Length: 382
Image (cartoon, rainbow, N blue to C red; front, top):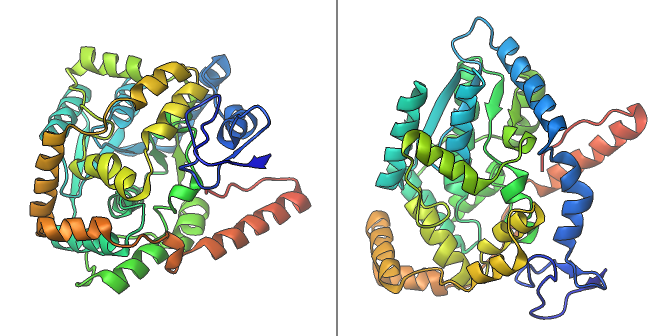
């Protein structure tokens, strides 16, 4: 494969050279599409085999939770993926403890959708409200750091809360709405791991102004050893074992519980909305619609022509953008001038700060060695 030329776009999907590591073959097909076919697709089962695997998974979860109040835990953001998964869990006869993490950015629509799901499914909901002053300080630290993955403060506390609640309730299985059909393509160069607590603490240590006394984190040891091997906890992604179509899922949610769609992807979070549709494309040139639409192309849910039409639409209405920036500044207690200065400040990569990448590489080498010696593969999450 030859290194990309400037401003080249994949001939099959819509990923382009905004990914600095993208490469193309002689037909102009990018490495993301090639990887999807060779590596990702074999782990995706939107067919009869998937139905069998899913049925077996559900029975295992029920057996593991027998005699307990809950047999799994499900993080509910109010987005389509997690909401649809909550609906399916009810159909499968599972008893999830539903956890919502309120990091201070919920839209009113997201709150209404969550309430509708909980009421219809008759689930127990536990809402973890993050200490706002600590969350605000962490957000500002990340903005001062000038890295691309500004969503880490929200994502890390979301997953950390799931693990902590699962442990305290003796739950072995964590349900995730993550799926190959809509998220099968994403450039690694755009971000680091949201679970990297070493990186999070290093950024906060340099740019934060107050201690994180209540913000929960998960260490490298916890994530890769304690939870999976000692606690025997498993994160499962049921949507990978069915023909998951996001538009059809949305229609089912609307018809069943009166679910109200968001105007934009991740519209359930006012922070994520501004981050993905303004901060990333303006400061870094990263348009997250491209990997999302490319995933839909690869999974057969959209044509390339339809994706290009979507990309031609503006990311933001000008008036809406000003309203959202004003709210963002008010929420973080910064002036518009300070916001503009943060947008124009030099950018950095997450690797400019201490991180767990070296430990992860060492773990992957150990995994390969164990596989070679024993013939058994031990899962190491990326």
